[in-house]
Image 1 (cartoon, rainbow, N blue to C red):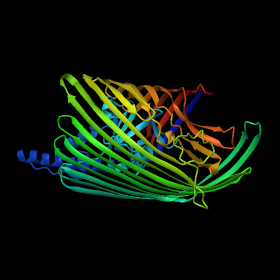
Image 2 (tube, one colour; image 1 turned 135 degrees about the horizontal axis):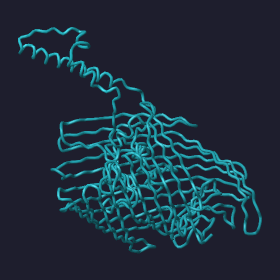
Image 3 (tube, rainbow, N blue to C red; image 1 turned 180 degrees about the vertical axis):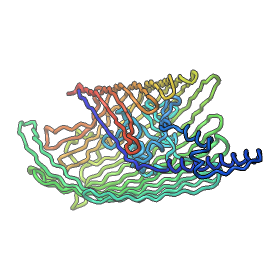
Length: 614
């Protein structure tokens, strides 16, 4: 068992503004002129003439004097709540929430949402993983690729953020969801907006980012364009001390010092278009692309003497077409193409054993997604939704080893063997793996007056690969209760399944750390099934308290163990029996006059994992 408590304090200093004083003085001037004109009009009607001196405005005029006397000595100002509840979700005015905060892109802006934290480079909501979508459109891109896109979207483009601790099935996402709504205006006069951004960061080496964005609106048509270029160098050091025991009882002390240097270039681009055929009748298309190059060098000294040089190139193309009708029908198709070739030249010597090879590998993925959804707004606050989603992907991958001097291929095709059978041996791998998923769902929502709303959905899913062929069902229940304005209580219950990454199930071996460390694939890795319960209470529209419990069956984790046969350490994904987690979280914002704007986040977590193999 493990316990963790996290305290986060966010502080923003704001400059005191004098605009309010200017506006108040200006209002008094207008009021004085208006009353003076009215007084003169009354005097004219009575055929009397009266001249007001400057002193009389303060001392002798009864009308103006009464106004000054009625002004309060203490003026009370209020603020609009930044969150409201709607059909099982919390809608945040994110643009106002990040005002005066150092958040210049969509990714940094999301970290300012109450309950959202960043752990190990990933966003979490109530200590659980969260799916992020743009304008309600789920993408086939990986989490890393989506985060890269979010970091290139200017924060000024954000309209609001919808937070769901358990998303209904109609969103085509299970578990926690954050939907970022970008500003899209197709009515009014034509307009063209643009933004240019530059960034320089210095740690051991320098890093740069250049970004440009355009937003165009004309009548029923809108389009946005985004380009970002990130480049620079990185420097890392790793020191390792190990006592490695082999099966024969011998113990080998290992001490290594590793220095890594890398150079990267990343080009990201996005084009999005929307055309409003009529009211609530829209056709939209979005394309996201990414091109990245990596050049890495790693040198190790100590017990192991090693030198590794590697290069890789990543290509990503993602296109999505959406069609929405006025009667609630939505249809769409999405294509994702990803290709990542790489090579590595490795020489390593440790305790009389030597590695010397050149390797080439590549992963190529083609993925198609089709969906059809229908929503109905019925009488008496009832709503009905149903649809289906079909996804198919094809993973073509290979890995080949060569003698760096002769160029001769090492080993033979290993399609009939496993990585465990070939432990420590070079073998070539060619893989063709297809996945198919069919998801059929239905749900309803109901509003019981202005205080209570219910959203229920059920999804049935068929998952098929060369190893797995099974049916599963997933339920989601969201209950929202608003006892008084500014007070919101939400209860959410859901289930989910998480599939392993493509590389994790490949029957292949990758060498890292100069050859002492190996990454082994596991083609028999099972998907993980999770069940979540969440309760959230919002006080006065800004103080947020939540508690949750999660149980995950067949939880997958990459474990590290030392081989008893060779002097290598092996990283491999394995299925644990289960993982359990319970937690409490409080988000408390507070201000001190006009110069301190802060938020205190407290998180307490109880965590347990169990694997009967150990």
